[in-house]
Length: 227
Image 1 (cartoon, rainbow, N blue to C red):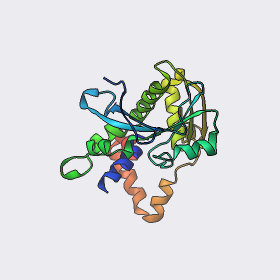
Image 2 (tube, helix red, strand yellow):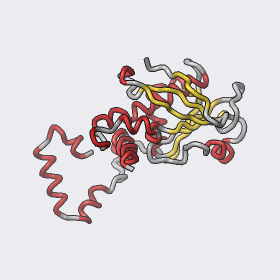
Image 3 (cartoon, one colour):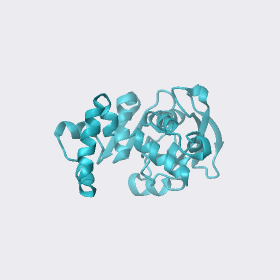
Image 4 (tube, rainbow, N blue to C red):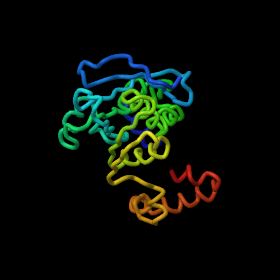
């Protein structure tokens, strides 16, 4: 997840940890908070994170947060009202967080000399841990430090929901996930969810032998090489 988020966010570029409210977006449904570039090292600075409501906030209604990963562009500015209408109805406060990969300040912070991606910075800024902590700050902004919300996620967003539950489960009342990317379960069940090996063989039969050779020569780094 971390690598995918970093790659997608930086590909776009080539074309204290508590949140602080800084501005009200032009629409009353949009808000921006400042979050750390790196939640583990807040001294590195902050950048704006945008989130949007599907309708005016009502403290009497429960909050549903739509969780999306870096490949899911359906959570974007101006889209949450329609998502609320299509998926949830009027009984909830529906919130979508536009991820840090869509914000130029985060992208620029991951660049090195000449405006090219610095992949070490990118991994640090865009890894899944950062997205999870962003979501938790938005949760606290809406319902308070100890308040609870509901989570909704599909595919990669569902995998982030599972990770959030593992870290902040005490702050979640209910969660719904569909078609979750769950690599540990996939591995345990022996499911063939990744066709990388077959695909590289179809492109060039010699690549299989090359990969085996590299893995044998770098046994201590097999996981990183495979990734």
